[in-house]
Amino acid sequence: MSPDNGDFVLSWDSGNDWVAEWLQEWSATEEIASGLNATFRLPRDLFLAHGQCGQVNAFFDPNQDAVLMCYELVGDVYDEFETALGDTEVDTWPQLVIDTYWFVLFHEIGHGLVHYYDLPVTGSQEDAVDEFAAVVLVLNGRAQAVVSAALYWQLSDGGDAPTRGQLADSHGLNMQRMYNQLCWVYGSDPSNWGTLLEYYPELGNRNCESEYQQKRDAWLTLLAPWMH
Image (cartoon, rainbow, N blue to C red; front, side, top):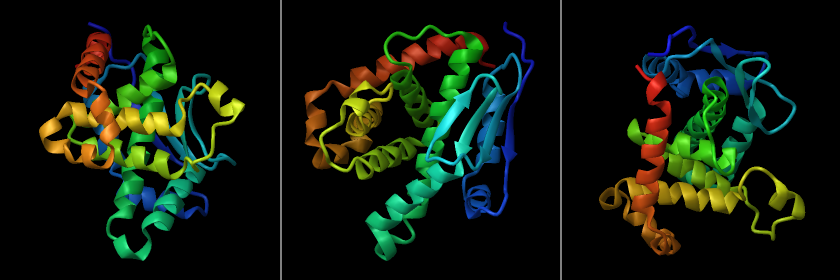
């Protein structure tokens, strides 16, 4: 059994940014960190840091042993959903923002665990940690967070033909990420998520149940030596 020599440690750079206060009030991040510490054995601390970055981004920094969740990214997600839904669904879109924050947080944690555990990854690591985030959230009853993040990719896509820079980027195109995430959620429980096919019938061309099961089983196998 691998030793447990570290914890997921939250940190907040509050500054004068409204996002810090809003996230701490709504995001349940303390509960997420507690759940992670009850699930994974870490070789050393992994900091879940929040602060200003000067860019719309989130990333894992192996030199700092830290995931950095940028307030600018959360602000961008907030603006996208507020613009799309506005006052007509004022009780709905704030939760979509938090859901998307959860997905991005777990995506970056996935990068951290790949680094900490030296996990083998075939294909794109960005795709792999999207899978990690989706599997963890689905298994913990938060599949809606995966759907919300998919909607954010759709809203932020813009609809233009991808540039050569976007095609060369390590991340998948926004619409590809959207369809992947929706497929995995649908495949995790087709009876409860069948309405996704009404809005995205293209998903019917994929074997989403097998895709989700494969990714779930792969990640559980990879992580088993480090789980409590």
